[in-house]
Amino acid sequence: MKETFKNLKHVYFYGKEFKLNLILEIICSIIRVIIAVVIPLFAAKQIVHYTNSAWQQVICVSIVLVFVSLLQNINTVIFRKNTQMFRRGTVKNIQLALSKNILKIKQSELDKSPYSIFVERIVSDTDKMSLIFTSGMSNLTSVISSIGCFIAVLIIDYHVFVYYFCAMIILTLLYLIRTKKYGMKDNEYRQELENVSEMTNELIRGVRDIKMMNAKDNFIDNLEHNIDKQINKNFEMRDVDIMYTFYIDSLITFFEFFLILFLIFLTTNNVISVSVAIVLLSYKSSVMINIMEKISHLLIEFNNFNISCNRVFSILNFPTEEFGTKHLDSVKGNIKFEKIHFSYSDNHEVLNNLSFNIKAGESIGIVGKSGVGKTTIYNLLCKLYEPSSGKIYIDNTEISELDEETFRENITVINQNPYIFNLSIKDNLRLVKKDLTEDEMIEACKMACLDEVIDNLPDKYDTILGENGTMLSGGQKQRLAIARAFVQKTKIILFDESTSALDNETQSKIKEAIENLKGKYTIIIIAHRLSTIINCDKIMVLEDGKIVDSGTHKELFRRNRTYQKLCKTELVEKKK
Image 1 (cartoon, rainbow, N blue to C red):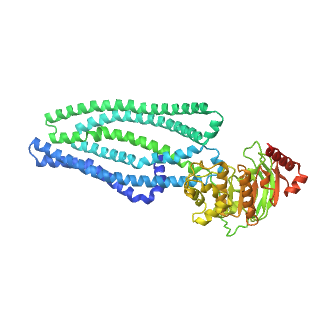
Image 2: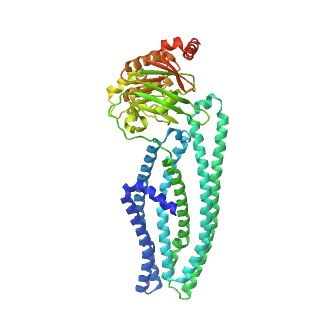
Image 3: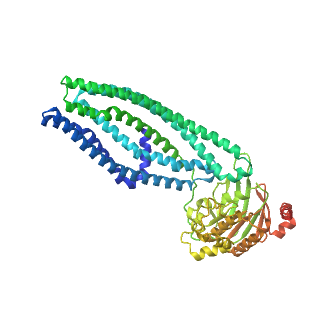
C-alpha cells in the first residue's frame, strides 16, 4: 500500500487543476456509501415500526428499494462524469510532461532504448494507470459500501452476520489467490506486448531495408513468434481469470441458495420478521459478492496502477541534458574545440585531443574517411553527446554554461537523412518559426530550390507529406530541411553531408544558396562530395580523430595526400 500511496501522490501532482472534479467524485462516493448502507437499515426499522401486516412490510420495503436504486443511478451519472474529467485531464498532463521530458533526455540514453518502449508507456500505460480514478475509485467505494452493509447486517441480526462472515472468508482466499496469479501473468503479458510493439515499430521504420535484403519471410517469422508468445501470455492470464471466476461463482451460487433456506428458517421460527429478511437478503450482493469481488478487482487495479506508474515514471528518471544559466543576447558564431576526447564505447576513441578554431562568418569544410569522427564533431557541438574530456566554446563561452534558449536558437543542423514530420510543408516550416509569414516561407523554399517541386504537389504548401516525408524524394527532403534552416536564421548552420542525395543541377543551386549565406553565418559542411566544399574559406582534414591539416582546396590538393586521395576517389566515382 505504501507504493500505491506514493504513486497516487505522484499522479495527483499532474491532476491538481482538476481537483474540483476529484472532490465531487469523492462526495458522490460518500453519498453512494450512505445510500447503500444507511437507507435500507433505516427503512427496515421504520417499516417494522409503522406497519402491521407482513404484506404491508413487503410492499413498503419494495418501494424503498426501488427509490434507493433510482437515487443510486443518478449519483452514478454524476460520479462517472467527474471521474472521466479528472482522469482525462490528468492523463493529458502526464503525457505532455513525459513528451517534454523525452525531448530533454540525453541522446546517448535514447540510443540505448527502442523508441517503441516510449510510445507504449506514454500512450498505453498512462491510460491504464488512470483507471485507478474510474474503475478503481468505483471499486473502492463498493468495498467501503460493502463493509458498511456488513456492519449493518451485524446490527440487524448476528445469525446472518455469522453466515456472511464464513462465506466471506472462503471467498476471500479464492479472490486473493486469483489476484496474485493474475498479476504475475499480467506483468509477463505486458513485457511480451512491448516486444511485439518494438518489432512492429522496426517493421515500419525498416520496411525498405527489409524488402531490399529479401528478409521479409525471416522478419515475419520472428514477428509471428513474438506475437504467439504475447497471445499465449494473454491466454494464460485469461485462463487464470476464467477458472477462478468459475470456482468463485459456483461457490456464491451455493451460498445464496443456503442463505435463502437459512432466512426461511429464521422467519419460520420468529427470529426475524419478513421485512427484515428481505433487507438482509438485499444486502446479499453487497456483502457476499461485491465485497470480495470488488476487493479482488481493487487489488488488481492497485497492481496494474503500480506497474504502469513504475513504467511511466521511469522515463522521468532518464538522465537529461543539462544547460547552464548564461544567456547571450547576441551570438556572433565563433567556435572553439579545445583538447576534445570522445568515444562511444571504451574500446575505441573516436576523437583524440581534437582542437580547432572557427571564426564567426567563416565557411568551413570537414573531410575525411568514413568513421573518422566528422559527424561526432556535430553531435558534440549540438550537445547530443558530452565529450569525455576537453571543452567546447561558442563566442568564448563554454557551451555547458549557456542556457537552452541561447544554445538551441543559434545552431541549425541539416542532417544527411533529415526527419520530415507528417505535416504539410507549411507546418513543417512553422515548427521552427511559429509566426512565419507567407513571403518568408516562399523565399526560404526558393533559396532551397524547392519552389518548383511544391508547385507540382496537389495542395502546394498545404500538401501533407506523410510519415518522414514519403511524398518527397531523398533530395527533396534535404531541400526542405535546408529551407527550414533558412527560416530559422541561426548564426551557426551545420550541413552533415546534406547534399549527398542531390543531383548535380540541384546541388549547384544549393551551393549558390550557401554562397549567399557566406559572411553572414558560420557555416560548417561535412561532405563526401568535395565539390560542395571547394569554395569554403577553409577545409579541415580529419584523420584518426585529429585535424591533420587545414587550408583552402588548392593548398590541400597541392600538399596533402589524404585530401588528394579523396579528390581522386570522387573523380573516379563521377566517371562511373
